[in-house]
Amino acid sequence: MTDRLEIKAALSVSDAGEITGLAWPFGTPDRVGDVIEKGAFTGPDTLPMLFAHDQAQVIGIWDQIAETPEGLTVKGRLLVEDVERAREVRAMVKAGAVSGLSIGFVTKQAKRHPQGRTISALALHEISIVAVPAHPGAQITSVKSVTSENPTMENEETQTPANAPQIDMKAFEAVAQRLDKLEAKGNRLGAPAIVQGEPDKKAFVSFLQTGQIDQKALTLAADAPGYVLAPEEVSGEFIRNLVEFSPIRSIADVRATASHTVLLPKRTGITNAVWVGETATRTASEPTFGQMQVDVKELATFVDLSLRMLEDSGNAEAEVRLALAEDFGAKEATAFVNGSTAEAPQGFMVAAGIAETNNGHATTLSADALVRLLYAMPATYRNRGAWVMNGTTLAVIRTLKDGNGNYLWQPSYQAGQPETILGRPVVEALDMPNIASGATPIIFGDFKAGYRIYDRVALDILPDLLTQRTSGLARFHARRRVGAGVVRTDVFRKLKMVA
Image 1 (cartoon, one colour):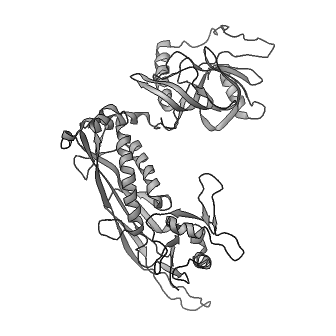
Image 2: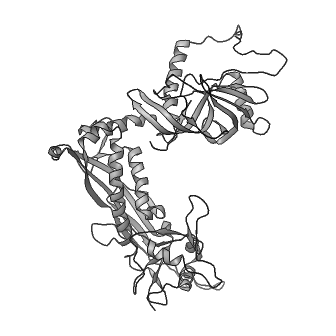
Image 3: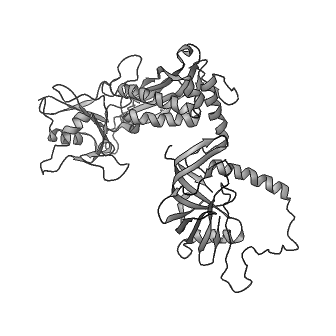
């Protein structure tokens, strides 16, 4: 199972903020057919209390969480004395405007069935108060009042005012059912924000398995007849997978384009202002401009999958995507660094006009040379720059120290933050040259300003279900189109291994 946080969705509250409820009933499925077995829940003794699964709205804490024969029962307290939003939620619960609980969890073990899943192990991460829970049985159990005037008892029926408007209950129930379905699908962290996009994904899976194109749900590639564009959710995930294998994407300026060629205006000269006296004649000057071109290239391959896998797997599109991501990413990474052919994007290491700093020795890397290279860059680009080198070079730098005995390389002390060299992040690129006489194993620069990547087609696929059928295989032809190039050479600088 994948470690994805899911949202499933009952509740009493007192004026002091004490709140109790049934977070998940056992024995009955939720609105999408999922059943959680007794004994499946694991997690900490206390959990944050959120409103509508919004991590920015922590309104209390759950400090009693237990499985009972009825289900997962919880008790906690709203921070009504300290958090304004908690007081608002208490008022909504007591008024009956909000009456549900919903759980956020990561599935650890589950079995699929035609109507949904039976979940036997999960890690509980948070419990939220919601308007419409994913499980219809997850409801607030009672509302307690500590006021002495006009107390309301649990399950007590209240009188309807004589002048209250009449409600069409059938229409109300129809709207509620529709909201229930939207909540059940939308309240999963990581689910597509647009629920209407789900048919696109289903049609794409059917296309991979049968080759049949649903013209209403799928989009044909305009530049390649017979190919189908992967739905947005699928192609977006594909790009994220590519970053793992093509690290330059994480530091470059990545944009989308609808053209096969991108023309960029380029200033080749500046105005020439001069200091003048009060009545001296001014001289005219004009900046000069040129034009540079970034061509979109095509990367293509095919992958074979067994027919049984396609028939049995409910995630056929994920199988294809993962099979392609590593290959496409590796080829992209090579091109972004050293691409020099007419068929590939331009690599930054082969771009003409990038300045170099001499190492001072042909084979031994110099710490002083790295300092000189860094401070040879203008401060604007130096403060936004990043180092790029391969792992072999990085291993050498980890042993280097400055004149005060401090290591140039510093590890990351925070999750998600890169390691640094002389205070600037470093990206490891497999295709960078090794340390050798005459080589340029290191480049430093402001890649956001200087290296541009244009995505034209993230991923489109043409299934071939016939030619490999005698071997029990289906062949999928895949392609993507991307262009790249150096748009500013002055924001980069290389280290050259010379004496």
